Image: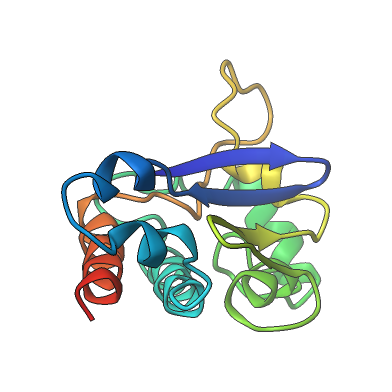
Length: 161
């Protein structure tokens, strides 16, 4: 369902819904409901914002914990009087991913939505490219069973309601 993509200096998550024609044959009226999902995208946006806040709060969580900062980074952050936590030097990234405006990206259409940030460097932390020589992966998106279950619940409520 969700698909991560990197697009020019920002990290974006695009969700596309498909299959409404096949479902329409089984359940009358479902094609109309899943043919236009604009009503649920704000709920998905809230789920994803909460997800990102949790990833920052837990420094990646148990599933994919962020590696510790290098000693040189810790020293540089102290000198700059920047927060000690990873990915929080200016707060631009977390702000773009959790608050409206600024670098936040939320593009909605009938069958898809794109959520993410466009601050110019988030994709370097998120990208799965290996081997990584200088910058360790500190992914702020990890859409696992918990988030997928929430999103399916919202979709189900929309279809049934």
